[in-house]
Image (tube, rainbow, N blue to C red; front, side):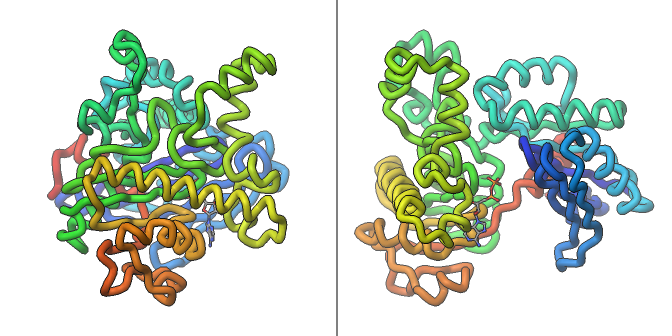
Length: 396
Ligand code: ADP
């Protein structure tokens, strides 16, 4: 009997899921969790779907513990946990697949080199995705590893949605709009096909609002446009990333204020967004509970940014039938959902205050022309499915 582990490895956290495979090789979730505060004071928590906590460990003095050290502990735990099942593969989220990698691939040394070369395009994510792959290759050299790309879901969007208005040769060289959060959007689309087929077929905007945030315009469950572009900086304002920005501002920073390329990168990726505007925090919960006007302003700008980008995607969709909120903010911040929907009321969006406050699956009123849902994402499940499909074929 077989089991697999799905990993979503970031700079300071690793999310994971452990799955047993049934007789048809369908992954059945067995446990999942998160390692947080890597590099500061790591803490690991693993629980079942029913909320039973299976492991809780913290290392208050563990600043020196590496991703590799923690994955070693996690992997040992997972091997014990699955008991008579053998872990046969690890699936990974890899943020950037570039132009060539448009479907999950088995990891090889050559693939790792190719992914390494894409790291400058996703400096917050890609290096940490690859650290996990390399660590596990050391810990279990014979275990197959599968890379699942966030860019892949968007790869067959219309050609114009991939273009920036820059010289052709640069587009040909790969400077184009890829789009991200693909595993999350693919999961949302697959869930909707099961729970609300009509919605899945319609003109839909999915809003992945977490630390990273983007929107995806879908028709019939396929991405036709998205707010992130060449890198995961474009589009919506995020926790620490700027979102849509006048490129002239970057030139000004470099030529007039003498910022180095590294300083610009640090500013755009880690000092902007909710953190930069508020000067307080990148965390929506903290901003919502802060009495500071700058916290309010940061939230208002986030809402404006999300609504404005949603308006732009309605052009790509030629209208709107449905809106889905997902990820940390999308799933858990009713006031933010309400504010975004209020700005989009002219599209025929009308939400029910009580359903929204309760985070009900459907938060729009019966009269609302646009149906609005809250749907928890599960990127780990998507990674698990892709891993199984690549190794054993489609289980469905
Ligand atoms: P990541 O992109 O790291 O996966 P998440 O999807 O976990 O991020 O989203 C993190 C964001 O969700 C943070 O801004 C956090 O404050 C926000 N969030 C989580 N729970 C709540 C809540 N109950 N109310 C408001 N915001 C929340």
